[in-house]
Length: 92
Image 1: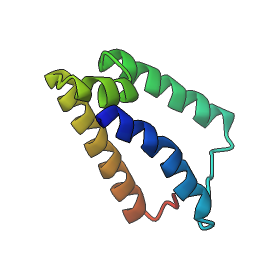
Image 2: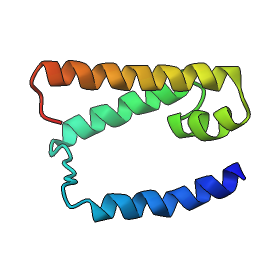
Image 3: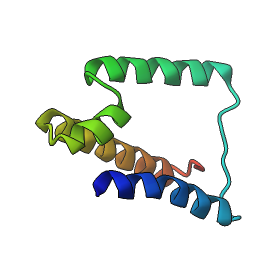
């Protein structure tokens, strides 16, 4: 049942995002910034023994304690980063 809901949610989420005309995607233009970001992601993947998607999708579905902690850490770090950037006045 969960797999069916997940599979149905993929196109539904994309359709909802496409229907919202206020969505604007912006990407960094600096090649150096993109390279540094990729390097940091690679280091995090190595330190976390897996990628965020792997821990979040596969690890949580298996109720892996390591994946639960890792996913919580990813989410908390992301929330903190966005909060600090908004407080600093950085447009996201």
